[in-house]
Image (tube, rainbow, N blue to C red; front, side, top):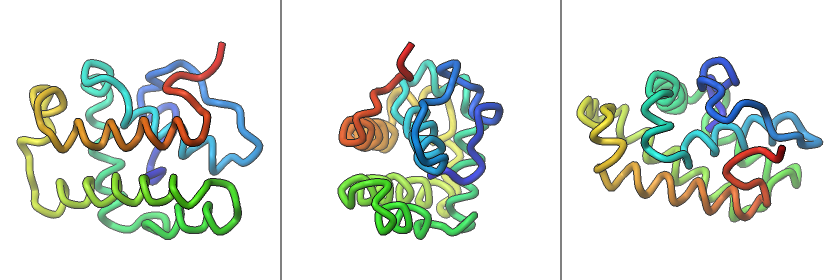
Length: 136
């Protein structure tokens, strides 16, 4: 999930990063917030979403193992790691099948795959107690 994500590449859609004790968790929360965002917000970061998806499909930096490592280190609960793995699998499908139609503003709004990924990301954020936007 965090492959290729930074405030800059994600368009800094919420203005600042969540403060967490582990920088890996901060990066994961930032990526989840982008995936959980409303379609109108995601549209502004469509390029970043494509980069994230391509990086995941290539297995960078360590593919799904990154999330497994966070769970093993006790940084995230296993339930969150499973939700992130499901999101990663959805991104893999979009990239591996070359579904160009999935990377449009209309798809962000209407494609059930995006709705599912948003729901999974929102659930993961809720389990982390992070919320969809950083605290003031």
